[in-house]
Length: 69
Image (cartoon, rainbow, N blue to C red):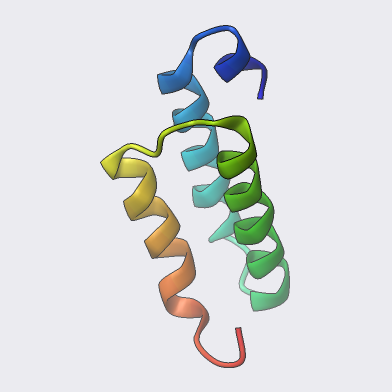
């Protein structure tokens, strides 16, 4: 992510968190899972150290998915 590369790790984390909030708007679990996975991969591959808030956003997005996700 460009913000991470430019040394703006907090901004990068905020953008990832915003993506997770937007993912939860979709009532269909399939696209929500895809958004969660892509965002998680983005966080991991960018080197962003997740803040407490970002961890909570990841959990909020994952928790309601249930089976079989």
